[in-house]
Image 1: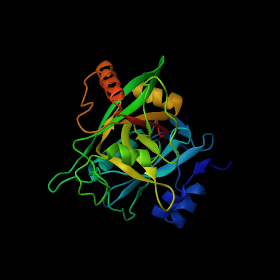
Image 2: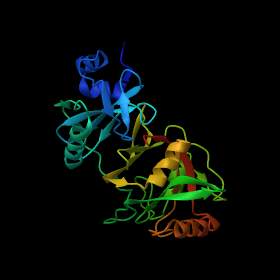
Image 3: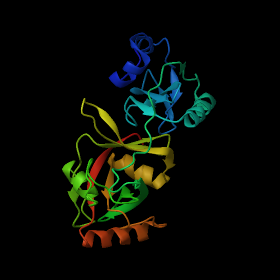
Image 4: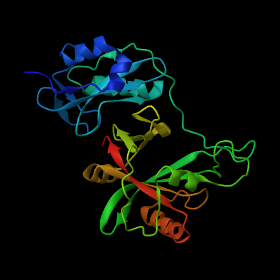
Length: 275
């Protein structure tokens, strides 16, 4: 019986054709595994299975996941996170995932927004929470830079953060109860119960990181369940200083409602990559 294994072109390009063919042929893939996303058992003969390559600065580790949870892809991580993944996999997998000594690309860092004046650099902050759209709780991210964001090369000092996102397809929010349209090519990467990145379309095809966590952010079970049930995450974006870090979801909603009234919120629904 053939294995139900998917090796994406992105993973294949990292591990090489020979290793990919050995995986597909069954020589390097386990019969059973613990899904690296939802942490429940999987069977490569019975369950469509994705290969997920965690790539650090010097080494990489291949893990396995239900295809319904996360597509086959490359996930950049730090060496510290990679060591934790190795420990987690070796403790839980019936057959340990192979440790691949493949060269790793430079790991992306949390992006700095375009500074609006010399010496200034805005970092994108992320707040996770459930936001009700009517009576349905939607897993949501609120993205707020720490300072004004200008277009590359701009010297005007004007904050163009929302304009840049609107150019990318995000829409102004007029009613917080309405679910925004899904934005093609963008997605939210959640793996091993943590938020890793927000991905945007790459010029050469595929996806690239728009925002990447220095340390993957732990999300609540309720947030992860809502994201999994709807297979999407709502991303809201506001200018610096509009919402702030709110300790409770009711306070987060109140802050968003005030920002919507001021016309200071754009949003889109982003497909979920992982659970």
